[in-house]
Amino acid sequence: MIKTVTRRPNQNRGVVPSIVSDGISALRDELDTILTNWFQNSEHSTGMRSFSPLLDMNETDSDYEIKVDLPGMQPSDLNVQVTDNVLTISGERRYENFDQSGDGKTPHMVERFHGTFSRSVVLPSVVQRDKIDAQYRDGVLTVTLPKSKEVRRSQIEIKT
Image (cartoon, rainbow, N blue to C red; front, side, top):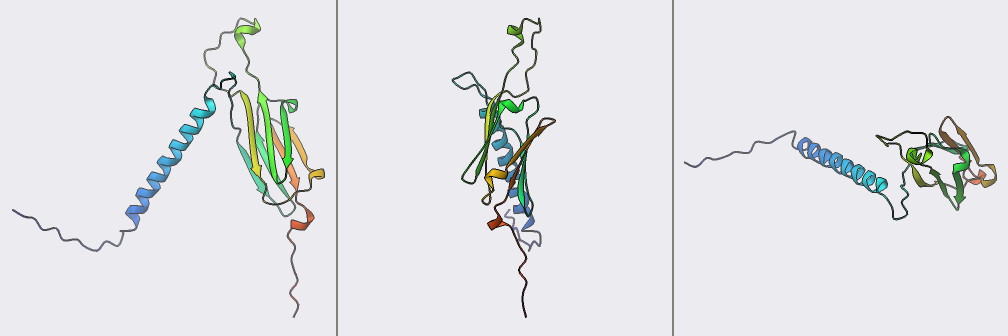
């Protein structure tokens, strides 16, 4: 017995491929996250671990503001530099080795990231280097980078 399948037009035809591609994109993003975390948490030949702190970048008409979560660090552990139009924030969070501290504590879980880090952000335009401000409060580093006057937006009057 031979069955004949008749294909009917499907108005939702475009939806199915987009659902599949969205699922594949989500899977790809998840794998990227897993692999990134795997390599960031692996021991380097120096015995130091590295991590990548999270950051946010916002823009106003006059400046860029970058906030980086760095809980438990001291300003002396941080380095902020601007080269050309690239902001680099680096530093080191030291590991609390309880075995060597002599305080009798034995670690059972160590999940807080430690080691060195370096994050670089390409700035969309030139900034006024002499007016850059960096503040560290409550575990958050806030770097404010005023835009160069040449790149600030201004409204142009249209004459008639």
